[in-house]
Length: 488
Image (tube, rainbow, N blue to C red):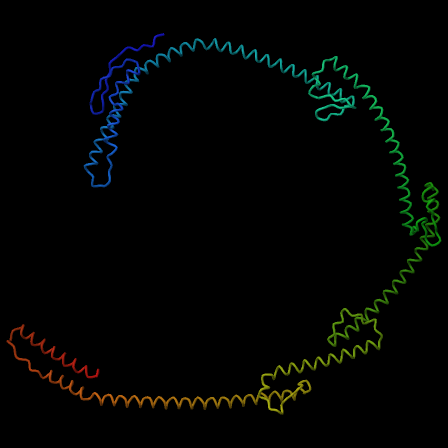
């Protein structure tokens, strides 16, 4: 198949109207020579244009040069792009024709390939079905032989079937031939029968032990029931017999008597025990009633005596006062009473002292009281009133003395102020007397300034204004001289 492309002429028109002639041979190595831009020209661009750099806004000429240079590079780039597009036009037509022929040939080959692929897939499908069938049969064999081993009594560990010293791997069961498998089963069967026989003997022994256990359990339950019955009747166990007073049931009777014999025994002893229990309960109730009455009387006496103690301020809530003999309790009451009265006197003294403690500093020597509790209420009130009167008199005397002191201080202050004013007056008179000649001189100067004669000027408006200003300045100067008198 030939791949030659005939030589043809073409041209490229750039954006600025420039026409570039092209010679296209179909040989890429030759056709790329149509590019007017080459490495030498690009290097020239680099050397001339990359050194152009703007530093400030004042470089307008440089900016214009950069703009023109960019246009040159842009035209070179566009010419490369257009030439490349023109060169590719022939290649596009070539590729399109080849693709059309490829599609035509593939469409004719595709049914053949599809048929062959379908036949391959069919074979693979049949092969997979065969594999599944073989796998199913192997699984059936595996399941059947595993069940056979289990039925013989083999234990499965998750990987092996074990019996005695024989181990059969689960995953290899289906690998045995029928002859090999039959030989293995014939080896396992007598072992399995022996083990089953031993298991049967063990099971029989267990059944015998179980029956004996059940019988013993029944006997123990019967003894327990009889024991509970005797206890419910009120009998006590002493380690050998159950007894209540003279009623006696031996362990042998409890264990060996049959049910009918046991019932006869219970019917015989139950009424006797019940009668004696009833009698004892009545005696216990009477005794308990007496104890409760005695305890009630004891508690009442204790409460009464605690109440007596509380009247004297004693907390007797935890005291057992009922156990004291009458004379001992009375002596204790007298002791409480004495302490209580003493405490009351101390409290009264403290309370009264608190009322007059702030007044005692006004008391006279004959009013020195050691125990306020010994006073009657009337005596204490009179004593308190006397102290309050003494306090009032003392405060009035102190106020009078304080007023006299303040009056003297005020008089002394006024005297000092008058003295200071007189001293200032005398000092001022002396100062004025010292500066009087100078003041007189300045007053005379001010007067003479005012008496300075101002000559009459011509009657023009300007001359009149000047004359008025002279008079004004003369008066200001005279007034300033007078003001300096007070500064002397």
